[in-house]
Length: 215
Ligand SMILES: [Zn+2]
Image (cartoon, rainbow, N blue to C red; front, side, top):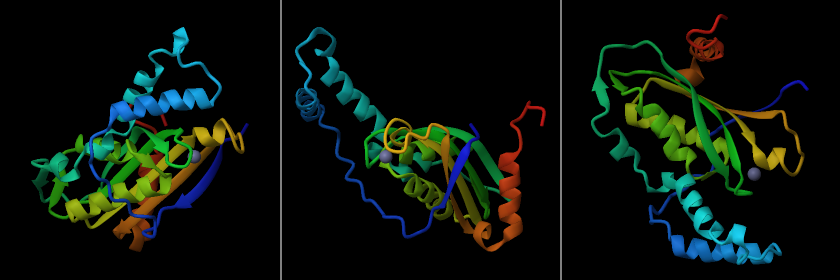
């Protein structure tokens, strides 16, 4: 089946979410998972499920660890003054997130580009920024905008482009049951929004095969 793409462009009106940074209460989570198993008609006491509440609680805590992370702390010491003013691109960043509507995973790739303004960020920090926002309950549009706006603000960049391509288990396993649908969202800020050439260059560069591929 041909790959279908749903294109949506992230805009600033995407809901802004404040996070409390409160540590996860594993005990409460565990008892809720036990209740959930009961509500599903299961027997939480049976062999295979005995440790499930504990496992699920830990897995949820891991998958939402982005709530405990702070971007300023992450970027501390990782911004460097530089005269370089060409586009910087980091593409094919794998991510795993969870949709806030169904608490089911969505996952895929993030491509990021920016035009530096006398400052660059250590390249390894970009995937970590992606992770910080991905490992929270999310919608793809907001994830896209949060990555873009964070880079734009923290780097004071001339422009930032973010494209996120993802598959949503809530679409694949339930609802429309479309297994080959990819949702694509983008956030174009500064020069990436105002200058079509810049945007096109970015889109062209992220479409190109990876290093080592014959394209
Ligand atoms: Zn969903």
